[in-house]
Image 1: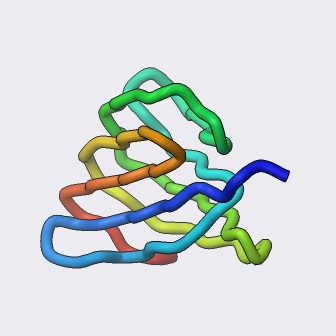
Image 2 (image 1 turned 120 degrees about the horizontal axis):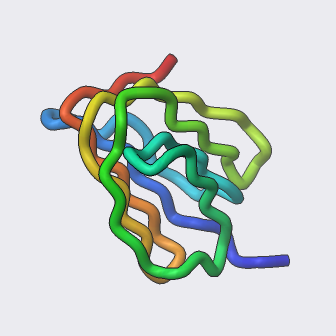
Length: 87
C-alpha cells in the first residue's frame, strides 16, 4: 500500500482541515485534478469550487474553496485559498 498524503487545506485566516489522505480532488483553472500518493511535484491555480479529500481512514471531507493555489511535493498537498470552509 502506498504511503498516505499529508494534506492541509487553509484559508487566509485559519487552517480548515489537515490530516493524512489517500486522495485529493480539486478544481483548477485547467480543470479538475486528482492527486494520489507518488504524484509529481506541481503548482496549480485553484478555481472556486469543491476540494474533496478521502482521509486515510476512509472519511470523505469536502471543503468549498475560492481562489488560491494547490501545491504538491513529496506526498504533501497544500491547498491555500482566499476563502475556504468545510461543507
